[in-house]
Length: 147
Image 1 (tube, rainbow, N blue to C red):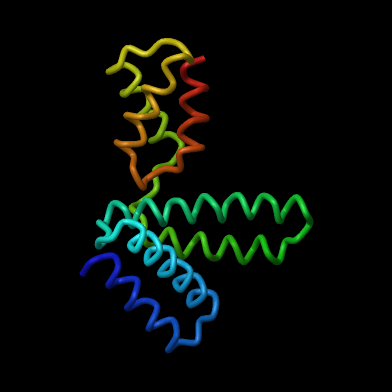
Image 2 (spheres, rainbow, N blue to C red):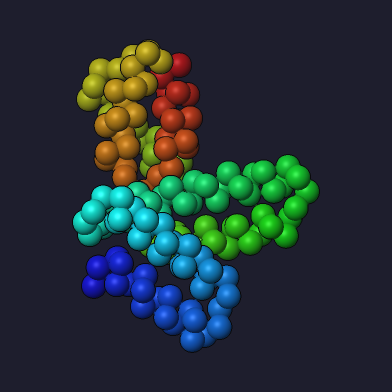
């Protein structure tokens, strides 16, 4: 079963179960996937679908921060629920130690020594950790290691 089929089945189940948060979240995901599919003019690969889901997770995390800064805890909690739902469709996320270990391996492979090598490190790191870590977190850890 492809990602697209799985998302469709989960949406049907959420509608039947009257789970409003999951239903709205999956509808938003389906709309994003459909828009990207129309843009590309072909079916999306599982990797492309994961990239879209990662993008939605990143946007929701930014929204959580903004809502908390604006003292809107109710909206922040709603966004957190959506993030949890999106994570169900991504591979197991790496923790900070695993990201750091992978980055140290990449840095030694590339013989990177200074912050100016960050671009090369990030290119390889994001290819290797695709869908398993958010780019912002990887970037922060890589900067810390290289400096």
